[in-house]
Image 1 (cartoon, rainbow, N blue to C red):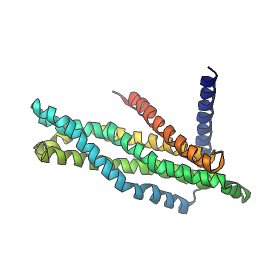
Image 2 (cartoon, helix red, strand yellow):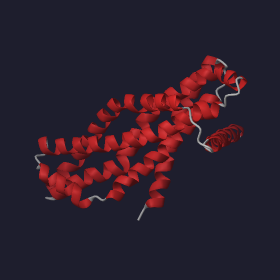
Image 3 (cartoon, one colour):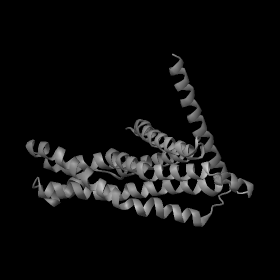
Image 4 (cartoon, rainbow, N blue to C red):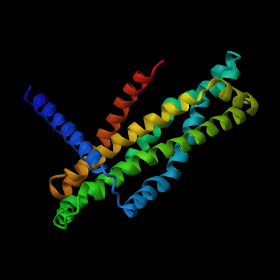
Length: 253
């Protein structure tokens, strides 16, 4: 029981710390004075450099959706639903979640390590000594960059995943391109696409806050940096799944 209580207190402390950091970020945005150079650097680093891994992951995710559902659709003679099945799964669930998990592993972990290294080497204290707010100068550009870039990467990943599904459907399952296209266009709505985008915005915020919090709250020197990265990745993954449930529940018809 003692261990369970200590774990509960630690969880509450971490959640409270992340909420406080989120409040500090929102307060720093009023008025929105940003370091444009820092923002542009993070947008490039988090967005452009993540495109190859997102494209590769999304293509095979879409291909897998078609490979799993295609044979059953053909067996039941409902090939007109093949594109809808793959597209619905990709746009609403598989695309946002899978890309967010890849994003947290690459960008979130890197951000935590970067901020944690700056913390243990007292660079944040140096900024405060120069009357520079670390939240406004370091955290806010990273949070905004993660939210924006995850949404953009999700849109790119959705398009690539649907392309991967179409390629597998045509080459391996012999479903005509026109059948796949009409199935996708006739049965899916803009709301399905926007549902995934809203999720990606929520996931981006959760990943950003978790990675930045564990980066600036690190303790224990260089050993603590590794622990902070591990904690940030775990917290981001859990946050993604929890938020996915609640966003889906709230927006369910």
